[in-house]
Length: 475
Ligand SMILES: *[C@@H]1O[C@H](CO)[C@@H](O)[C@H](O)[C@H]1NC(C)=O
Ligand SMILES: *[C@@H]1O[C@H](CO)[C@@H](O)[C@H](O)[C@H]1NC(C)=O
Ligand SMILES: *[C@@H]1O[C@H](CO)[C@@H](O)[C@H](O)[C@H]1NC(C)=O
Image 1: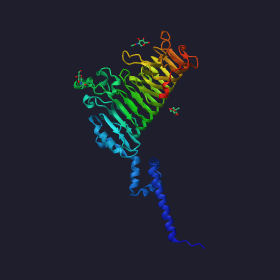
Image 2 (image 1 turned 90 degrees about the vertical axis):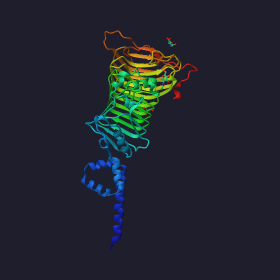
Image 3 (image 1 turned 90 degrees about the horizontal axis):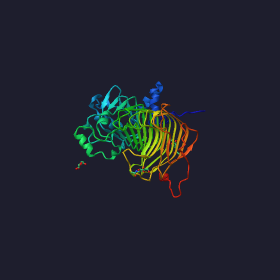
Image 4 (image 1 turned 45 degrees about the horizontal axis):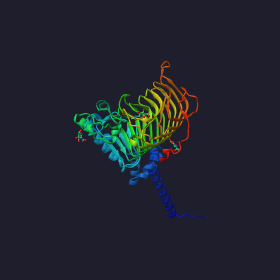
């Protein structure tokens, strides 16, 4: 005998339905992306279910908006005609996108946007914002747009999860800067209002402080992929105080004789991967400065330019710390140096745990270099303290050079140690030319294999002199 109470059945079904619908809502809110994909995937039943569950519930609409919201600069008044100043439109677009988690700022293809100095600043923005850059952004070339000089043109600061992607181009139109200002001193960075910049401004010239094209500051989870940055007045792409940085399928491009145009500049940044990048510029393809660790650079093409460099470190008696840097599977062509470490006399701190492997060089002036006497002026005063350089591995470095294959100039008081070389095969670009052989000064380490040319100047390791302290512990 089985009796069913109809009231109980209704109550049970109601509970079940309620549970099911709240489950769906939680899922769609938490997994916005997956949810969107499944809807886009087009199962009619799922779509119906989604519609029913969303109904007029505000919670559901909001959760859908956080995952799909797109803010197109054209909807915020950008003209994209290459002449009208679109800076305000970009700022307004950002203000909208900033409020919505995982939103997308759309810079559409087929338009050229003239944008002045702009900061997409984030301490109060939602996380995981993307810039879909398919169009072209160009910098103003009139001096009036730059005041007395700025350190960057386009800046992203204090963001958690920021992605710049797409097929688009950022063009700094740098030639107006390269030609007219006197030799730019990169150290003037901290001091933008010198007499020189003021008088230059009066004459309608570009200010003495040249901006980096695209700079990220104080952000975590930064991705730059697909885009091209060209003709920057100074560095093309810079990361300062960032963690978890990924750069891939990236192009930096400016003429080999454009002054101080680094490709990618890293400073105080950790956990950085740079891969599949093509870097052609007038200065270092990649420049790794103090405070960087856990940097992995691979499958990069460099040249023209000054090669891949760590430093200059320790300028003006500063302390510099750089560790765990890997550079592998790179080709370097027609550059000043290949893989280089440069430190100023008088600094402190250390560079350690560095590996350069599978490096193909072609017509590089000096493929392998450590210079603890780096000086970009005509002369620097001799000082005994130095940024310590230790644990530097060179593995499988091959190709041609035009001046000298290997140059290790290390400090008398704090020599280079733990320099290891394996499978080095460097030939003069023309066999008939008589070029300098390897040079070493106070460089200690080991040859793991025979090398071409023989590097007999490398001294075998000796223990630190009694009383000498390693300054690597200070890092
Ligand atoms: C510029 O230099 C002149 C003298 O050379 C000096 O009197 C003046 O104060 C300087 N101006 C600034 C803004 O530094
Ligand atoms: C060195 O950096 C790599 C990433 O490039 C990281 O996976 C590894 O754990 C780091 N090693 C140390 C000892 O920190
Ligand atoms: C610095 O030291 C080098 C080598 O020891 C020496 O040739 C040079 O004259 C010194 N320079 C100065 C400015 O003292």
